[in-house]
Image (tube, rainbow, N blue to C red; front, side):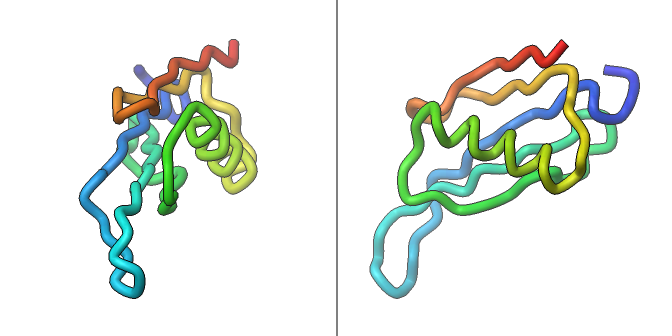
Length: 85
């Protein structure tokens, strides 16, 4: 994509552990594909389709911008392509 906020690219890291409980957590990150800057990053105790929506909404609220596209790689059940246009 050729400009900021044309495409947000999501990724999930599955190797995060809560030191207090020992439970596995999932780091979900959205990056602006043009600038490679983070638009969203948070930890979740589980992932599903709602996680993708929560991450997208979090980035939109934080930056007051709506990307043209939002692409999230396969990560367990976390997979989506959102076309905002």
